[in-house]
Length: 480
Image (tube, rainbow, N blue to C red; front, side, top):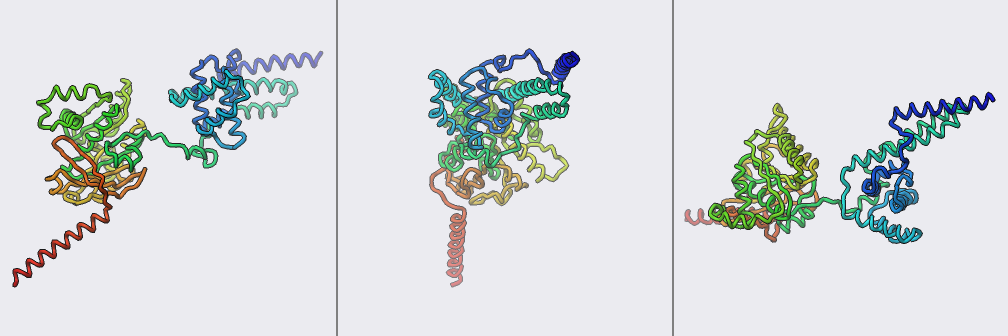
């Protein structure tokens, strides 16, 4: 009788302890033990994240009972992922998963097979929204279920006064499902480095340049146009923005030197081909040409040196609050932004500005284009290299793609010039291309003929040598 009485007391104490402890960690004894309360969409998004995020999959594998998934086809899908991880000690890629779902689910009934494959096909067309919420909610639910199970298992141990075993059981349960993302794992993430990275580049409008940088400037990347004053930096930026607009992208164009209406007028000319001097007389024609463009253009003007990168960031936040998608950001130009580091030397201020511009590209997951002015050596240079960049060479380090525009007096007279690929993280650089640049209607074309910087240097030296020889001949002839 005494033993039975002790058992009942222990049971009552265990239930009391469980209920008090449950309140402390947010457990609910009457809570459903599956994800049905969150709905079908939540569960499908969760399974998609388990496939696409290796670190999250590792975390969930420790705490997810596939029976938590309400739908049978999702249970099959996740089980195949976990089985592959157990067998091959690495996470399956999307391509591998395609093969598995084609060949390795024949044991399931016909309906389940169809549901699994239909779900996988839908995955390819959609991206998961509210990722953090889904991950946090799923982990929290699973950890509570694991802890609940551990506490129930501890009741028989409590009867035996096995307190050390109880402590170990609870501690082990608490450790499961912790975030174990320590970075890219060389072996576990083997498949990931052979997948195509979704840069989602936006075209430059120049086929030759797009081929060099794999389609244009990608999400989170910073592109810089280098040119001396009056060579066409602002027009090059308008050209890049206009190409994005024509592809249906939303462009946010910040101008720190020109009026917003002047910038917008340049877009009119670039898109329609109507010369700038005729724009005001062809208002109706321009409207007919631009009214069906799907992309949106927002031009925001700030006085020179009045806006910082944080000013731009605050403006972008307001646009996002109004549900305006940001596809490309243009800053004309970075050197005219105000630095937060006012006490530093100018070169350090400029370096900081360009670092922050790249951060904005990453935060908004879109390309950012800006421009930088050369020093005096670039004014009449045949080819402008990064050595000619004004004030801070270090700002080149953070950029992903840099090209320069050089236009000598001769070039300007015949609408010519040269474009030099100075830096390219996604392909070759050091190449020079002739360009046709008609500033009267913001028209810039990159021509196919290519030269290396070394070849151009040789040609320049050759011309200089020929010029000296001709002068020497004239000098000798004059002496005679």
